[in-house]
Length: 169
Image (tube, rainbow, N blue to C red; front, side, top):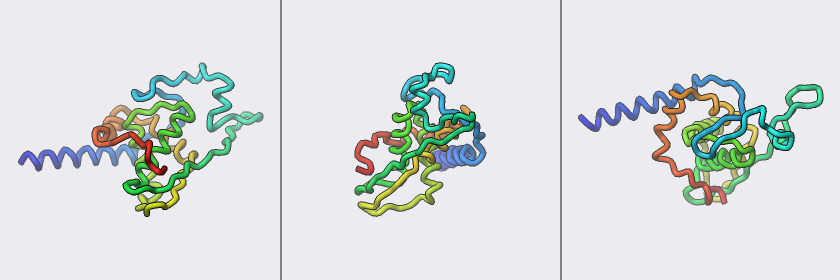
């Protein structure tokens, strides 16, 4: 009986996470704060130098102009998965652009990147390329998760190893 209750609770968490994936509101923002990396500045506090480092700037006529995004390139090692590489790409993006994400938001981004790539199985030494622009898009989505949606993704945090030092090396 206890196992059945545990399984039902697990299914509820998975259903809530799937609901968050498909019905999450999407409003763009690259400035948020999360519990892992500290506080990111408010938009008014962004200096010209930091704005120049941002992945999206305004052109002279006021329209948004995408800077060239790079691709994160990895080579699969024994034990690597696309999800681990998506996690590493998400963390790299956060460090590069000084974007703080909670652990639940990182899981949201990596899951969506993996699903968008059709969850590929990797061969050892297979080269994998993850587009930084795709990471940026999912980071924006993650920053708009409601507290309920983030809590649903947070259910997976205790089972995740966020150390990606040797992934794709």
